[in-house]
Length: 201
Figure: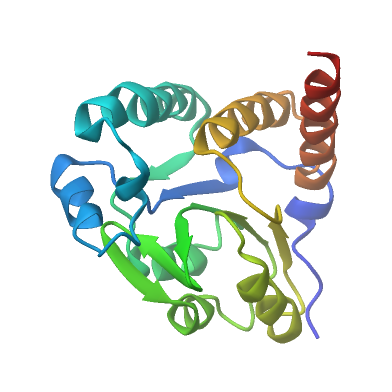
C-alpha cells in the first residue's frame, strides 16, 4: 500500500492542480449537449448558448485568468483521454473535474461517459486528490474509495450550481497561493467561509 502524496497532505501549491472542464466550452459542444436527449447540461439552459456564454463561460474565463497567473493547468473540452492524461501527470497530483451527471453517466465535452469509463481512468496507484465537481457523484465516489485506497476522493453530495463551484475554486486557489495550507485545510477553510456566508445572507 502506497502513502498518499505528501504534496496533498502538507503544503499544496496551485501548480500541483489540473482543472478539467467536462461541461461544454464551445458552441459545438453546447449543441452536442443539447442533442443528448434531455440528459445533457445544456438542456437546462433556457436562454441557449448566449445565456450560457454570459454566465458559465464568463465565470470560466475569469477562473482561467487566475489560473494562468498561478500556473494551474486548465483543460477545456475535456474528454476521457484528457482525464486519463491528467492522472498520469505526477507533477500535478490534484485532479479536479467539473462535469454534469445524468443517470450515473458523466458529461464530457458533449458526450456521456458511463461511470466505469471514469473509474478506469483513475490508476489504482494514484496517490493524489480527485475532486469531483458534479451533481450527485456519490456512486462513483464510493467505488473509487473502495478500489483506489491510496488517494483522496472529494465531492459534495446532491446538486451544486457550477457558479458556486467557480466561486469556491477561485477562493481555494488564492488560499493555496499563500503557500501555508494543504489542499485539505484550504478546502475546509473555503467551505466553512461559504457556509457562514450563506447563513448570514
